[in-house]
Structures are given as structure tokens and as C-alpha cells.
Image (tube, rainbow, N blue to C red; front, top):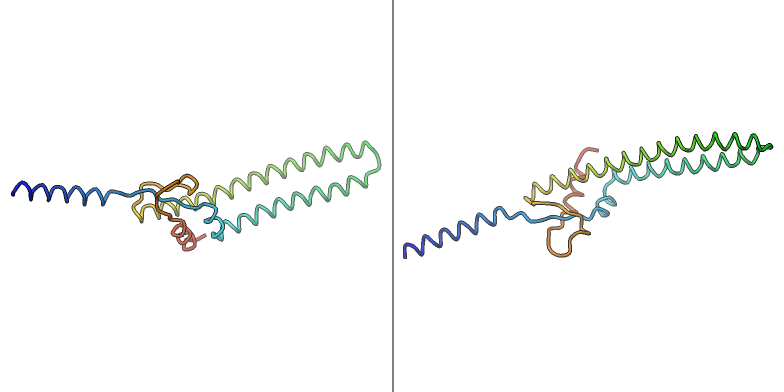
Length: 149
């Protein structure tokens, strides 16, 4: 009887200890987070505005090109515009990459905080989860809305 009680105590300790260390995997729907995160919306608008600015630049330059009368002027103009556009395009790509990385980092930091709070082992994107896991999307969105921008 003494061994039986000792066995039960040992078994209950193993089960309790095992449950307290079982964290599991959380997952987020990144697209839903982006759609509900004001800073991400602001960044998207900023990047889109820069893209529209580049399109308008090309439209304006096309009008100027049509007003030129000699092939030499047109060729010089084309070379000048090509160089200007290349510079603008590089600045656009740099801005887009920088802003997207900022958004990603903020979301990743919020997901890490939720992971720690909920004692999870890892956080994945919802597209990588077939079965199981814990959906922490709404918790990440709440964390982002409460964070300073």
C-alpha cells in the first residue's frame, strides 16, 4: 500500500509538471493582423502614394516628350528621364522595404510578447498549421493597438 501511494504521488507530480511545461504552438493570421493594424494601413498608404507619384512623374514626362520637336532633343530627354526615374525607383524600393520591415518587426515583437504571456513554445503563420495550435491573432492585434506607434 505504501508503494502504491508513493507511485500515485510520483505519477501526479509527473503529470502536473508535464502540463505546466507544455506550451504548445500558437499561430497568427498575418493578413488579418495587417488589415486590423492602423500603422500597417498608414505605411501602405504612404508607399502607395509614392508609387502614384512615380506614375505621375512618367505621365508628366511623356507630355514633355511629345512637345519636343527634334530627334536629338528627344534622345537627350529620354536619357535624362531614364536616369531620373531610376533614381526615383531606387528610392521607392528602399522606402517600401524599410517600411515593410518596420511593420513586420512590430508584429513579430507583439507576437513574441503574446507567446511569452500565453507560455507558448512557438508562433507560426496560419498557413503553416493544418491541425491544432492556438489562434493568437486577436491577442496580437490587441497588443499592437495598445502599443505606441
